[in-house]
Length: 389
Image (cartoon, rainbow, N blue to C red; front, top):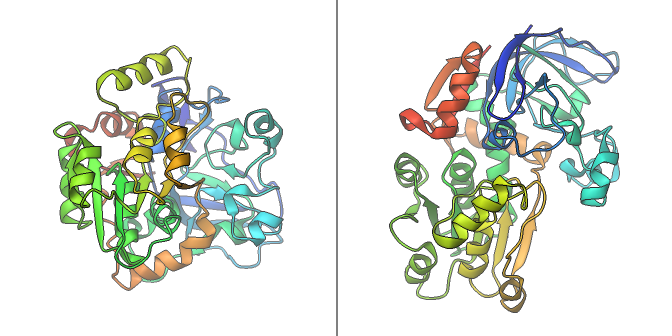
């Protein structure tokens, strides 16, 4: 089969690799009908995620048709059209039983690699380095899905690939970001990052009862989508100081909750922005925490920070004194896909959310390198690319 393989920073190639096989009786094999590039894939593309090896197949947001199932798969059969969580959960451990799927005890055979960094191992993730299990990714023609009864959700009749695909990762990530805000009627929610996850966080905040949503970004087409499709008020942080603008827009109090939909490659301005980029470039700091600093200072006293942007390692110059003295609550983590996916499919079926409009481009899988470059550099007003094997 053909698949997108990583060979180093800014080097991905579409190569011929062996087809996946059933390795465990709980596996399923999917023929991929649609996949996409996630913002967190760019962290791999840019070389910031450790333990990648040349030839690794990447990609974790996907859907397809079941073509083979293991003997112990009970809920799926050949021919089923499914969307699959990017997070791999066993369904049986303490954490899966408590709907904390990305903390699964059993799906990551390389959890031992994480223990020195994280203290404990976490769940496996498709195509996201050997640190997260070394699983082959889904930017490919076929993929093996472990624990398939728990990871795959059947797509309701009538939904297009464009509508269903975001339910694999971007939509539940954004929704969890809003859910972690513990939104109450009348709340004002600020979202840093107006990419696909940020757009879904904005829409989810309204679904959960927010009165106002404010988007912070610098890319005009993303801000336009936030305003016109996600119904958010907008701040271009290159034109105005986001912290001061948020104070003015909230009567001096600050947002009730702030969502980070950016992660470790946040763009900063001024001296601190240069400081983060310089330290990350020479690997004296793994992540750029500009958004985190800004959220801590901007959030109202007693408010909530929800962190859904991916962070990989270590950061510095964090204003922990401000977070402590303001009594901020901080929630974060890889998304609990299996918890949210059925509910989100219902929202799409009911027309509560248009999940398809984040796709501004469609390209064949063979043009993955061009798609990565376009998405990374935001060329041609690109917000999200759907890849067809």
